[in-house]
Image (cartoon, rainbow, N blue to C red; front, side):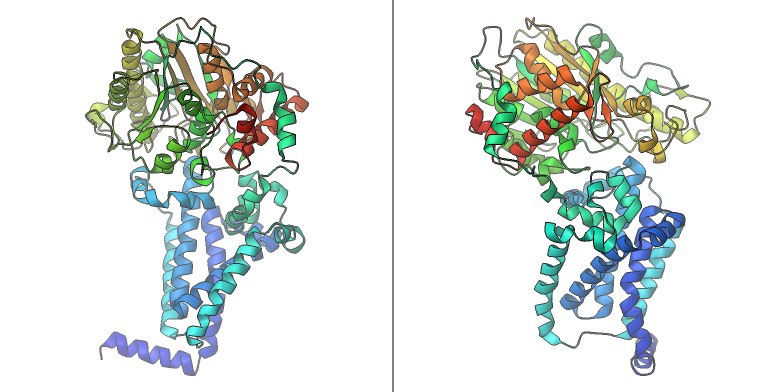
Length: 626
């Protein structure tokens, strides 16, 4: 018997005979330990943890009860205490770390639906380069490991044998009912002081009630999406005014090829205050915008969450009608759904999705066919030769070549292409070799690391802009009528806690809720443009204006005089009344009254619910069979 085995046996005998009560107390208190350190790690603040314990003890207890339920469930599965502690501890610490880093980088918390990205977990190693763990967190993890090691030495086990398996379904049913059943959730306020009316403000939920409770509250959020008066009669009455009187294809509609390009993190970085650039990072955008329609799109996200503006532009639906931080493809898109690609398919178009990254990310490979696309091509299915520079992602020039390839294939009526770039994705700190930097950045308020980050970002933006220029020059010499919509999905995350936006004085606070309206527009507005190689016969309605992303497909359809449909008529009415509607950030066009704002938000909520979750009454109203 070696020294470790002998020592372990002696300690275990001592704990089981003379100090068994200490072992059981340690086992019982383990979830309490986890509740404290996990909330601390998510807060990254001892003061915030103290506030939680002093002012929201009910919410803390709520999270603690969930932990005890999970702890008991694991105990029924693996029988020994240390095994249960290992599983529970690993999951809790992992989730709290994800919440901390996600909020640090993009100012969004970790939500249950983020678990849907687990299949792409390996790809996140590219995104997280340069992240360092605070030493306090390392101490917490080491202490937890020591705690689990102590529980291992106690040798405590359940003595119920196989009977313990009966506890698994009982605990699961009680846990699911406690978290998701509406009648139970209504008692949270009375029992724990948790106000579910605040669930739309996720940051307030997590900051007020702590990470564990905030995370769990979201499991029951889907039940609040159904409008109380949702019915066929309600939908038909609300949208009757938007049903088109004439659905015939007009002679002015020339069946143009349509390209919609989401340019990853494409933004005008020269808007940063007191920062100088040796060259313009986006000269092609400016030369094209000088002659064609352009403006700013007010994105529903910052620094990440690409899927939300992408979904809004393809469908005209509003992600603000869904829980904050939503991933519509994975959470809600489970059946054939109205989309603008679907509309053009009904006119005889081919439709393809293109992405220079994994086709499974956000489960686009499943979502795109449900939106009417014939196929979705990820990085392994593209037809053109793939190219990289020193950065980790396929170049935007490769995407431009793939688009040109698709346009040169035979299409009986036309083609609808949705393309998503990747080269300009974060992280920017050490992204490119210095030899590839083509723009020098300077500024008195910038640190060396900020300068390095900005020069990396400028390299990616300049490459994206070059791809735009290449496509413009190609399309403008085509004979086939063609129109292209190009937009940036969100601003880049250039550093933790909104640096260098803060350090340059471009914004004054590192808390989004405290930004002025001007600062909000800066942080959520990305450039877009639209150009056609033919005379569409109509002026573009929103030139040089700010608009919400869900308005862009309707504005494009109006510009090319595509056949009228209910969704387009509704969105064009929204444009006339309130071009910017961002419930997430409380941004609304200045001349839109509160009453009109509420009316439009309600209509958009009902439209989105009906298509994604409801009975699809709007499709039936128009005779669509998607």
